Length: 438
Image 1 (tube, rainbow, N blue to C red):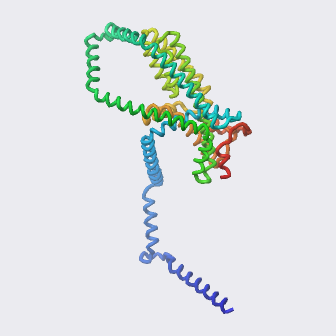
Image 2: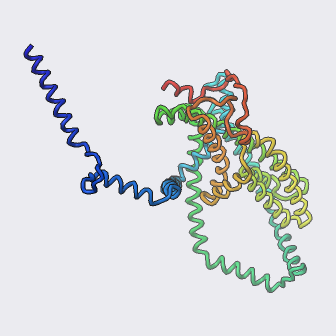
């Protein structure tokens, strides 16, 4: 009993001391006397008056300004890091694009009962045979037609000189000779730069070989373990962001696959159309030029036009201006077919991007990273378009109503109500399903 009374008195004393301490620390009420105004209230009044000096719009703009500057600095540092690691980053990006092209074939083999490793090897070696077989045919054609092309180019240059002298420009032979001498002098004066350029080309060749094998290994593992790799990366994020990020990546991957397949089909049609015109007109190097058009078409809008101009130039030098005009007409017709039929019908179903956004993305990519930047700019924009639009509309990670990636239709059609499509039982398990209970 005595112990209980003692404990109760100790608790009462502790409560009393705590109340006295709180009373001492609490500021006294303001009575209107400036001398009795506590220092804390003076500081609060000064802070309030300092905030009221600037208008609210200026304060908001300032808050956005330093965040924007921080974003620009972060983007610059990221680009610098990518530039330093370009030998690794570029092969990985190429492997991702190739994986988007070949992953449906590997998935089809897996659904037929083949092991994932064996399916990846079969698809990889089939792609290598196709690529190297095509390159061998192109190189053989180029070597066989090189001699005749040299004589035709020489005759074409002679015809161009005659047109310059007898045409509307009225350039004399002496002026042409002066221009030729200037070119030779420039080559002689920059011989050192050309030599260093040859050495850098040798270094670049070594980097290309290294990058080729890196692409092969990376592509194999992307085809075999792509879903597991994405799941692992998503597990590194906070728990509440895992499912939303995984599903955004799932939809973005479907967009990338659709974009790559549509681009290959459009490039194939461009190459076949311009190649038929070159074969009919018997233009030298028709097959290599058609292959060049196919590769150039992977850069939308710009690529096929530039490579078509190369074909017109070869026709002009090798076969005269009449053939060049006919090839130019063929190139224009193919471009019209691509712009008014193929792009809306095929590419429009894969990804909905405004033509201005495509042009600006290509220009920015070329300025930042050259040809590689122009190649990956549009697929990167398409992937970001899908991911951002999904996360804005579904921040908690729920699937879209129609189970289709957002961003494949124009923005005004996104709000249309659609029935929920049942999941295809043959679809491979997505990354978000393995993260839902993680």
